[in-house]
Image 1 (cartoon, rainbow, N blue to C red):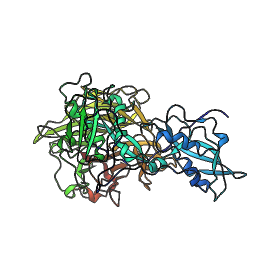
Image 2: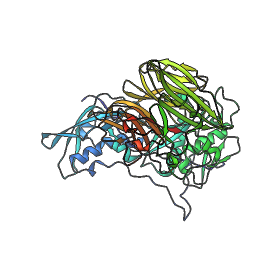
Image 3: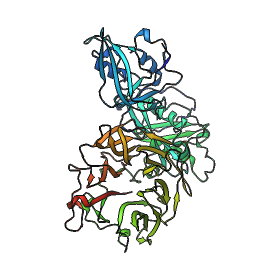
Image 4: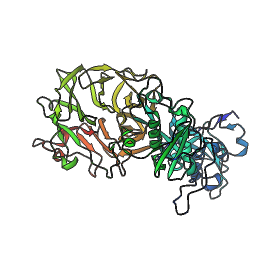
Length: 618
């Protein structure tokens, strides 16, 4: 038998936050102390791990459990998987030096072929999603193709099932990832140290709750994945956690050596201890019961709470002074006859006047698509619009900005044979991106346009672009595939080679993309059964949920989402899109945007005339 390496495939999960506080005097690593005092609620104890081989009594349940065997704590992975394989097939079946598994999404239920003598060939049709490593991070897929086969043997109704001829590379199903892991977001400061940038991880459900904060601190110390690193500022290479994080406690205690707060090259006038504390607060916020105390070697301990500084550290948070209690409705707009109108689903039923910057002469006319965003600055509220127009067969950008009560004069830039919708980058909102002639360009409110070189394979093939809520990551659509990229913000937007990864989706081909959460995008395109579909997918491809089913229309070319605020409870994904002949708002019982929902539109407007809906992003 040729040597096999046990890998795995899986995807799915829900997002959680963490937090912590408290620092003891000692700095050595120590055991976590006893449980909480009498009368305190406890979070100690792990959740359920994946089922054992003996839990299955049918070939279907055995296959499901086998595809979940790699889930859980990394040091238990190999033993658990080997437990499903008949002893005579285990000899060359090893995990290799690293505890990692290949994730795969099943396109359809497994197919069983009876081989006789209580033996079945199992055939799987899968999408390979990525590789889940010991740090809870999903990297790019290493496996190719969509067909996987292996052989099982057993008696229906008994628990004597075994894998008799394992697959070349083991798969962890996406359903198993969803069931036996908890998605968790950790944060790194952007390269310019102006905002926190999220990174998606997965905590094994069986990991003891008391150990989870310590695990998350270890993830922060080891740093971000390769594709994200150019966009962020990791902890110093010599940073080291000095102790386990005792939990549960009212005060979460975190201790580091002094190197953890050393500033990176080129960064001056930054309170590194404050920023490390905010990074820990956001990464551990669900564990912070009262506050978090950070101690460094030779420094006085500092205490952090969920105050205004905490909320302001993350540009994706729209409530810098605290969490909003309700899932507030965003401002919605759409185009009719080249003009922008409010939609009825906006606050106050869409009866408010248009933003002032759209009311100047010559601004709100001849528009093909629009991006409208606002951002609070130290001086005043800043609003900016990027409007795609066409003149003499050439596409242009009409740019207009407003600060406080004053509106700047509009400027027009470009002259291209093709142009997609524009997007604004946040934190700060001083630059935007647009696809023109299949290449990516950055623009400023003053009208300057500069090409942004992208890695080979993407550059020159771009069809759509969208910006993450933090303004340090983008998603681009190229050759029908979605990619996420980390960007550096300076005088120009820059993308380094290697600072990107493909997003595996359930679609055969994608046609539009936008960010719906800190770590998720919404994607429109054609499914494997050649039907149009809209999916929300985590940027590592591990999680996927279909958003629109049953629209028999043509290809979606325009898609927008209103990103989830990370601290708002009860948020529902908000998505609008248009294709030839109709526009849709998926946040409602009837998704089609009817003519009567366009406030102030001329009489006689039909739904087919409603195009390019969009949100005001703040």
